[in-house]
View 1 (spheres, helix red, strand yellow):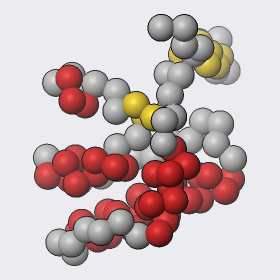
View 2 (spheres, one colour; view 1 turned 90 degrees about the vertical axis):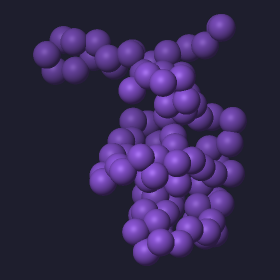
View 3 (cartoon, rainbow, N blue to C red; view 1 turned 180 degrees about the vertical axis):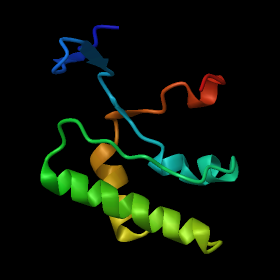
Length: 98
């Protein structure tokens, strides 16, 4: 598929191979929430500080709204989704592999 994968060694000389795209379920967070998920983990690898802040705010707002029983896309959520457009994967979420 001609994708490039980032390989990062850790301090124990183990190599970690990262997907060429960012794994993000922000645009499908309602579906994940419906599964009964109680926690969401956000990890950053090479995003800059501003990207990390925006993504964190977007997820925080989405989770807060879902916990209140309502969900609508805030400006932060829309901006994060626009920034991530075309750069993400949903991994195996919709393939039945978790």
